[in-house]
Length: 400
Ligand SMILES: Cc1ncc(COP(=O)(O)O)c(C=O)c1O
Image (cartoon, rainbow, N blue to C red; front, side):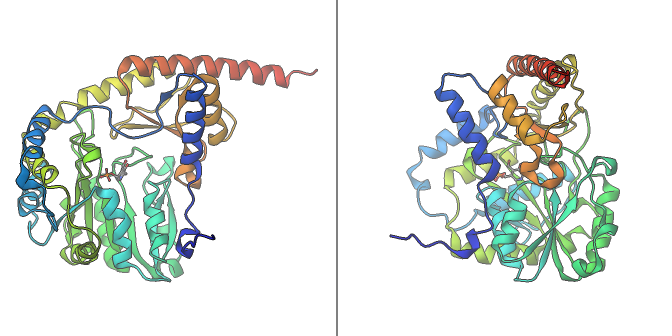
Protein backbone atom coordinates (compact mmCIF):
# COMPACT_ATOMS: atom_id res chain seq x y z
CA UNK A 1 0.00 0.00 0.00
CA UNK A 2 1.28 3.45 -0.85
CA UNK A 3 1.22 5.57 2.29
CA UNK A 4 0.13 9.11 1.49
CA UNK A 5 2.32 12.07 2.29
CA UNK A 6 1.30 15.70 2.46
CA UNK A 7 3.09 18.02 0.05
CA UNK A 8 3.98 20.24 2.96
CA UNK A 9 6.38 17.59 4.26
CA UNK A 10 8.41 17.71 1.07
CA UNK A 11 10.68 20.63 2.02
CA UNK A 12 11.42 19.13 5.44
CA UNK A 13 14.51 17.00 5.68
CA UNK A 14 15.73 14.91 8.60
CA UNK A 15 19.20 15.84 7.37
CA UNK A 16 22.39 16.07 9.24
CA UNK A 17 21.04 15.53 12.77
CA UNK A 18 19.67 12.12 11.79
CA UNK A 19 22.92 11.18 10.02
CA UNK A 20 24.93 12.15 13.06
CA UNK A 21 22.65 10.20 15.39
CA UNK A 22 22.90 7.11 13.14
CA UNK A 23 26.70 7.30 13.11
CA UNK A 24 26.78 7.65 16.92
CA UNK A 25 24.53 4.59 17.26
CA UNK A 26 26.75 2.61 14.88
CA UNK A 27 29.89 3.47 16.87
CA UNK A 28 28.26 2.67 20.23
CA UNK A 29 27.04 -0.65 18.88
CA UNK A 30 30.59 -1.43 17.81
CA UNK A 31 31.67 -0.89 21.42
CA UNK A 32 33.22 2.56 20.93
CA UNK A 33 32.96 5.23 23.58
CA UNK A 34 31.48 8.51 22.36
CA UNK A 35 31.55 11.82 24.26
CA UNK A 36 28.47 13.47 22.90
CA UNK A 37 28.70 17.26 22.63
CA UNK A 38 26.20 17.40 19.81
CA UNK A 39 22.88 17.65 21.64
CA UNK A 40 21.79 20.64 23.73
CA UNK A 41 19.93 18.69 26.39
CA UNK A 42 20.87 19.81 29.92
CA UNK A 43 22.51 17.06 32.01
CA UNK A 44 22.13 19.06 35.24
CA UNK A 45 19.14 18.25 37.49
CA UNK A 46 16.25 20.61 38.22
CA UNK A 47 16.64 22.50 41.52
CA UNK A 48 15.84 20.22 44.53
CA UNK A 49 12.88 22.46 45.40
CA UNK A 50 11.25 21.63 42.05
CA UNK A 51 11.89 17.90 42.41
CA UNK A 52 10.19 17.93 45.84
CA UNK A 53 7.23 19.98 44.67
CA UNK A 54 6.77 17.90 41.54
CA UNK A 55 6.73 14.68 43.60
CA UNK A 56 3.98 16.14 45.80
CA UNK A 57 1.88 17.27 42.84
CA UNK A 58 2.26 13.99 40.98
CA UNK A 59 0.93 12.15 44.07
CA UNK A 60 -2.23 14.28 44.05
CA UNK A 61 -5.06 12.46 42.19
CA UNK A 62 -6.90 15.75 41.65
CA UNK A 63 -4.23 16.88 39.20
CA UNK A 64 -4.87 14.28 36.49
CA UNK A 65 -7.72 15.93 34.60
CA UNK A 66 -7.42 17.97 31.41
CA UNK A 67 -6.23 21.45 32.15
CA UNK A 68 -7.58 22.70 28.76
CA UNK A 69 -5.17 25.64 28.84
CA UNK A 70 -2.47 27.09 31.08
CA UNK A 71 -3.53 27.80 34.67
CA UNK A 72 -3.90 31.42 35.71
CA UNK A 73 -1.31 31.02 38.46
CA UNK A 74 1.28 30.25 35.77
CA UNK A 75 0.46 33.43 33.85
CA UNK A 76 0.89 35.47 37.04
CA UNK A 77 4.14 33.66 37.89
CA UNK A 78 5.60 34.32 34.42
CA UNK A 79 4.57 37.99 34.61
CA UNK A 80 6.22 38.40 38.01
CA UNK A 81 9.37 36.62 36.73
CA UNK A 82 9.55 39.10 33.82
CA UNK A 83 9.09 42.04 36.16
CA UNK A 84 11.73 40.84 38.59
CA UNK A 85 14.32 39.64 36.07
CA UNK A 86 13.96 42.01 33.11
CA UNK A 87 11.95 44.98 34.39
CA UNK A 88 9.13 44.18 31.94
CA UNK A 89 5.47 44.64 32.96
CA UNK A 90 3.08 42.11 31.48
CA UNK A 91 -0.66 41.72 31.82
CA UNK A 92 -0.96 38.08 32.97
CA UNK A 93 -4.33 37.63 31.23
CA UNK A 94 -3.59 38.90 27.75
CA UNK A 95 0.19 39.10 27.48
CA UNK A 96 1.31 35.65 28.69
CA UNK A 97 0.44 32.27 27.20
CA UNK A 98 1.75 28.94 28.42
CA UNK A 99 3.22 26.53 25.87
CA UNK A 100 4.35 22.93 25.77
CA UNK A 101 7.91 24.26 25.48
CA UNK A 102 8.99 27.09 23.22
CA UNK A 103 9.50 24.58 20.40
CA UNK A 104 5.75 24.06 20.33
CA UNK A 105 5.03 27.78 20.16
CA UNK A 106 7.74 28.45 17.60
CA UNK A 107 6.37 25.71 15.38
CA UNK A 108 2.77 26.96 15.60
CA UNK A 109 3.08 30.76 15.61
CA UNK A 110 3.80 31.09 11.85
CA UNK A 111 0.69 28.95 11.14
CA UNK A 112 -1.34 31.55 13.01
CA UNK A 113 0.26 34.58 11.34
CA UNK A 114 1.52 33.83 7.83
CA UNK A 115 -0.05 33.14 4.46
CA UNK A 116 1.35 31.75 1.24
CA UNK A 117 3.51 34.35 -0.45
CA UNK A 118 4.48 36.02 2.81
CA UNK A 119 8.14 36.22 3.76
CA UNK A 120 9.66 35.67 7.20
CA UNK A 121 13.21 36.74 8.05
CA UNK A 122 15.14 34.01 9.86
CA UNK A 123 18.68 33.96 11.23
CA UNK A 124 21.30 31.95 9.32
CA UNK A 125 22.80 30.08 11.11
CA UNK A 126 19.73 29.60 13.23
CA UNK A 127 17.82 27.12 15.34
CA UNK A 128 16.21 24.82 12.75
CA UNK A 129 12.52 25.18 13.71
CA UNK A 130 12.54 28.86 12.65
CA UNK A 131 12.89 28.05 8.98
CA UNK A 132 10.88 24.82 9.18
CA UNK A 133 7.83 26.42 10.77
CA UNK A 134 7.78 29.20 8.18
CA UNK A 135 7.83 26.59 5.41
CA UNK A 136 5.10 24.53 7.11
CA UNK A 137 2.94 27.66 7.09
CA UNK A 138 3.41 27.85 3.31
CA UNK A 139 5.42 31.07 3.61
CA UNK A 140 8.97 31.75 2.44
CA UNK A 141 11.95 32.07 4.80
CA UNK A 142 14.57 34.70 3.91
CA UNK A 143 17.99 34.29 5.51
CA UNK A 144 19.51 36.98 7.68
CA UNK A 145 23.23 36.11 7.63
CA UNK A 146 24.83 36.29 11.08
CA UNK A 147 28.53 36.98 10.63
CA UNK A 148 31.41 37.34 13.01
CA UNK A 149 32.42 40.76 11.59
CA UNK A 150 29.03 42.16 12.69
CA UNK A 151 29.12 40.42 16.07
CA UNK A 152 26.55 37.99 14.66
CA UNK A 153 23.87 40.72 14.41
CA UNK A 154 21.88 40.94 11.14
CA UNK A 155 22.33 43.78 8.66
CA UNK A 156 18.82 45.09 7.94
CA UNK A 157 20.13 47.45 5.25
CA UNK A 158 21.18 44.46 3.16
CA UNK A 159 17.61 43.15 2.76
CA UNK A 160 16.26 43.89 -0.75
CA UNK A 161 13.21 46.17 -0.98
CA UNK A 162 11.01 43.61 -2.77
CA UNK A 163 11.65 41.14 0.08
CA UNK A 164 10.81 43.75 2.69
CA UNK A 165 7.50 44.47 0.97
CA UNK A 166 6.46 40.85 1.43
CA UNK A 167 7.95 40.41 4.91
CA UNK A 168 5.42 39.89 7.72
CA UNK A 169 7.53 38.34 10.43
CA UNK A 170 11.11 38.27 11.70
CA UNK A 171 12.64 35.75 14.11
CA UNK A 172 15.62 36.68 16.29
CA UNK A 173 17.45 34.77 19.03
CA UNK A 174 19.82 36.39 21.57
CA UNK A 175 21.57 34.81 23.40
CA UNK A 176 21.53 32.47 20.46
CA UNK A 177 21.83 28.89 19.41
CA UNK A 178 24.04 27.91 17.69
CA UNK A 179 25.70 31.34 17.61
CA UNK A 180 26.10 32.23 21.26
CA UNK A 181 26.10 35.99 20.66
CA UNK A 182 24.31 38.52 22.86
CA UNK A 183 22.35 41.54 21.67
CA UNK A 184 22.54 44.89 23.41
CA UNK A 185 19.77 47.38 24.07
CA UNK A 186 20.67 49.56 21.07
CA UNK A 187 20.29 46.61 18.71
CA UNK A 188 16.82 45.88 20.08
CA UNK A 189 15.94 49.58 19.67
CA UNK A 190 17.03 49.33 16.04
CA UNK A 191 14.81 46.23 15.68
CA UNK A 192 11.76 48.13 16.97
CA UNK A 193 12.38 51.04 14.58
CA UNK A 194 12.91 48.68 11.63
CA UNK A 195 9.82 46.61 12.52
CA UNK A 196 7.63 49.72 12.78
CA UNK A 197 8.88 51.15 9.51
CA UNK A 198 8.23 47.95 7.55
CA UNK A 199 5.26 46.55 9.51
CA UNK A 200 7.10 43.40 10.53
CA UNK A 201 6.06 41.35 13.55
CA UNK A 202 9.08 40.48 15.70
CA UNK A 203 9.48 37.10 17.37
CA UNK A 204 12.35 36.98 19.83
CA UNK A 205 13.43 33.58 21.14
CA UNK A 206 14.86 34.14 24.65
CA UNK A 207 15.13 30.45 25.60
CA UNK A 208 18.65 31.00 27.04
CA UNK A 209 17.70 34.12 28.98
CA UNK A 210 19.26 32.92 32.23
CA UNK A 211 22.36 31.17 30.90
CA UNK A 212 24.39 34.37 30.71
CA UNK A 213 27.81 34.43 32.39
CA UNK A 214 30.54 36.69 33.70
CA UNK A 215 28.18 39.07 35.49
CA UNK A 216 26.42 40.12 32.28
CA UNK A 217 22.70 40.81 32.75
CA UNK A 218 20.38 39.33 30.12
CA UNK A 219 18.29 41.87 28.17
CA UNK A 220 14.75 41.05 27.20
CA UNK A 221 13.60 42.38 23.83
CA UNK A 222 10.40 43.47 25.59
CA UNK A 223 12.40 45.79 27.85
CA UNK A 224 12.92 48.20 24.94
CA UNK A 225 10.26 50.92 24.50
CA UNK A 226 7.76 50.02 21.77
CA UNK A 227 8.74 46.33 21.66
CA UNK A 228 5.38 45.11 22.91
CA UNK A 229 3.66 46.96 20.06
CA UNK A 230 5.63 45.07 17.45
CA UNK A 231 6.42 41.69 18.89
CA UNK A 232 6.57 38.82 21.29
CA UNK A 233 9.20 36.90 23.18
CA UNK A 234 9.45 33.17 23.83
CA UNK A 235 10.89 31.90 27.08
CA UNK A 236 11.30 28.46 28.55
CA UNK A 237 11.85 26.54 31.76
CA UNK A 238 13.94 23.95 29.89
CA UNK A 239 17.35 25.54 30.40
CA UNK A 240 16.79 27.97 33.28
CA UNK A 241 15.41 25.23 35.54
CA UNK A 242 16.67 22.12 33.71
CA UNK A 243 13.07 21.06 33.14
CA UNK A 244 13.55 20.30 29.43
CA UNK A 245 11.62 17.02 29.55
CA UNK A 246 8.65 18.66 31.30
CA UNK A 247 7.89 20.61 28.11
CA UNK A 248 6.89 23.92 29.57
CA UNK A 249 7.54 27.40 28.26
CA UNK A 250 5.63 30.54 27.38
CA UNK A 251 5.20 33.39 24.95
CA UNK A 252 4.73 36.93 26.19
CA UNK A 253 4.35 40.46 24.84
CA UNK A 254 2.01 41.63 22.07
CA UNK A 255 -1.55 40.67 23.07
CA UNK A 256 -2.89 40.40 19.52
CA UNK A 257 -0.12 38.07 18.39
CA UNK A 258 -0.63 35.95 21.51
CA UNK A 259 -4.38 35.82 20.88
CA UNK A 260 -3.74 34.40 17.38
CA UNK A 261 -1.55 31.62 18.77
CA UNK A 262 -3.95 30.98 21.65
CA UNK A 263 -6.82 30.57 19.20
CA UNK A 264 -4.84 28.03 17.16
CA UNK A 265 -3.77 26.15 20.29
CA UNK A 266 -7.32 25.94 21.57
CA UNK A 267 -7.95 23.59 18.64
CA UNK A 268 -4.70 21.70 18.88
CA UNK A 269 -4.04 20.85 22.52
CA UNK A 270 -5.62 20.60 25.96
CA UNK A 271 -2.94 22.13 28.13
CA UNK A 272 0.02 20.65 29.99
CA UNK A 273 -0.04 18.03 32.75
CA UNK A 274 -1.16 19.95 35.85
CA UNK A 275 1.67 18.81 38.17
CA UNK A 276 4.12 20.26 35.64
CA UNK A 277 2.21 23.53 35.50
CA UNK A 278 2.21 23.87 39.29
CA UNK A 279 5.91 22.96 39.55
CA UNK A 280 6.56 25.61 36.89
CA UNK A 281 4.76 28.18 39.06
CA UNK A 282 7.05 27.24 41.97
CA UNK A 283 10.10 27.52 39.71
CA UNK A 284 9.20 30.95 38.33
CA UNK A 285 8.46 32.36 41.77
CA UNK A 286 11.55 30.88 43.49
CA UNK A 287 14.42 33.14 44.56
CA UNK A 288 16.91 33.69 41.73
CA UNK A 289 19.68 31.82 43.61
CA UNK A 290 17.74 28.65 42.84
CA UNK A 291 18.57 28.86 39.13
CA UNK A 292 21.67 31.04 39.28
CA UNK A 293 23.49 28.28 41.18
CA UNK A 294 24.20 26.45 37.92
CA UNK A 295 26.01 29.36 36.24
CA UNK A 296 29.34 28.67 37.95
CA UNK A 297 29.21 25.05 36.74
CA UNK A 298 28.70 26.19 33.13
CA UNK A 299 31.56 28.66 33.47
CA UNK A 300 33.88 25.90 34.76
CA UNK A 301 32.88 23.68 31.86
CA UNK A 302 33.32 26.45 29.32
CA UNK A 303 36.78 27.27 30.65
CA UNK A 304 37.82 23.60 30.80
CA UNK A 305 36.89 23.00 27.17
CA UNK A 306 38.40 26.30 25.97
CA UNK A 307 41.68 25.75 27.85
CA UNK A 308 41.92 22.08 26.85
CA UNK A 309 41.41 22.94 23.19
CA UNK A 310 43.87 25.84 23.42
CA UNK A 311 46.54 23.34 24.51
CA UNK A 312 45.72 21.41 21.37
CA UNK A 313 46.34 24.58 19.36
CA UNK A 314 42.65 25.24 18.73
CA UNK A 315 41.70 28.70 19.96
CA UNK A 316 37.98 29.02 20.56
CA UNK A 317 36.08 32.06 21.81
CA UNK A 318 35.03 32.49 25.44
CA UNK A 319 31.31 31.85 25.33
CA UNK A 320 29.41 34.47 27.32
CA UNK A 321 26.01 32.79 27.24
CA UNK A 322 24.06 29.59 26.49
CA UNK A 323 25.24 26.02 26.93
CA UNK A 324 27.17 26.00 23.64
CA UNK A 325 30.46 26.86 22.10
CA UNK A 326 30.40 28.06 18.49
CA UNK A 327 33.87 27.72 17.05
CA UNK A 328 35.63 27.99 13.71
CA UNK A 329 37.05 24.63 12.72
CA UNK A 330 40.85 24.42 12.80
CA UNK A 331 41.21 22.54 9.51
CA UNK A 332 40.78 23.18 5.80
CA UNK A 333 37.86 20.79 5.40
CA UNK A 334 34.09 21.24 5.46
CA UNK A 335 32.32 21.39 8.83
CA UNK A 336 30.61 18.14 8.01
CA UNK A 337 33.84 16.33 7.13
CA UNK A 338 35.46 17.66 10.28
CA UNK A 339 32.56 16.64 12.56
CA UNK A 340 32.23 13.14 11.10
CA UNK A 341 36.00 12.48 11.18
CA UNK A 342 36.16 13.71 14.75
CA UNK A 343 33.32 11.39 15.68
CA UNK A 344 34.73 8.33 13.91
CA UNK A 345 38.39 8.81 14.77
CA UNK A 346 38.26 10.46 18.20
CA UNK A 347 34.82 9.48 19.55
CA UNK A 348 33.75 13.10 20.10
CA UNK A 349 30.41 14.15 18.64
CA UNK A 350 29.77 17.79 17.78
CA UNK A 351 27.34 19.38 15.35
CA UNK A 352 28.65 20.70 12.03
CA UNK A 353 27.74 24.35 11.56
CA UNK A 354 25.99 23.86 8.23
CA UNK A 355 23.26 21.91 10.06
CA UNK A 356 22.02 25.37 11.11
CA UNK A 357 22.18 26.97 7.66
CA UNK A 358 24.68 27.78 4.94
CA UNK A 359 26.31 30.54 7.01
CA UNK A 360 27.30 27.92 9.60
CA UNK A 361 29.81 26.37 7.20
CA UNK A 362 33.31 26.54 8.68
CA UNK A 363 32.05 26.19 12.26
CA UNK A 364 31.04 23.49 14.73
CA UNK A 365 28.80 23.67 17.78
CA UNK A 366 29.79 21.92 20.98
CA UNK A 367 27.40 21.60 23.92
CA UNK A 368 28.64 21.95 27.50
CA UNK A 369 26.51 19.05 28.69
CA UNK A 370 29.14 17.01 30.54
CA UNK A 371 31.10 17.55 33.75
CA UNK A 372 34.53 19.22 33.59
CA UNK A 373 36.51 15.94 33.60
CA UNK A 374 34.61 14.61 30.61
CA UNK A 375 35.13 17.86 28.70
CA UNK A 376 38.85 17.67 29.51
CA UNK A 377 38.88 14.13 28.15
CA UNK A 378 37.05 15.38 25.03
CA UNK A 379 39.72 18.08 24.61
CA UNK A 380 42.49 15.41 24.89
CA UNK A 381 40.81 13.34 22.24
CA UNK A 382 40.45 16.38 19.98
CA UNK A 383 44.13 17.15 20.56
CA UNK A 384 45.22 13.66 19.45
CA UNK A 385 42.86 13.88 16.49
CA UNK A 386 44.26 17.25 15.39
CA UNK A 387 47.85 15.99 15.70
CA UNK A 388 47.10 12.97 13.56
CA UNK A 389 45.23 15.13 11.03
CA UNK A 390 48.23 17.46 10.73
CA UNK A 391 50.58 14.46 10.32
CA UNK A 392 48.33 12.96 7.68
CA UNK A 393 47.97 16.23 5.81
CA UNK A 394 51.75 16.70 5.88
CA UNK A 395 52.49 13.22 4.61
CA UNK A 396 49.83 13.56 1.91
CA UNK A 397 51.35 16.77 0.68
CA UNK A 398 54.84 15.27 0.43
CA UNK A 399 55.89 14.24 -3.05
CA UNK A 400 55.70 10.47 -3.47
C1 LIG B 1 17.26 28.56 20.59
C2 LIG B 1 16.28 27.56 21.10
N1 LIG B 1 14.99 27.88 21.11
C3 LIG B 1 14.06 27.02 21.55
C4 LIG B 1 14.41 25.76 21.99
C5 LIG B 1 13.33 24.83 22.44
O1 LIG B 1 13.28 24.78 23.81
P1 LIG B 1 12.03 24.23 24.62
O2 LIG B 1 11.02 23.77 23.61
O3 LIG B 1 12.55 23.12 25.43
O4 LIG B 1 11.52 25.38 25.41
C6 LIG B 1 15.74 25.38 22.01
C7 LIG B 1 16.13 24.04 22.49
O5 LIG B 1 17.23 23.64 22.52
C8 LIG B 1 16.71 26.30 21.54
O6 LIG B 1 18.00 26.00 21.52
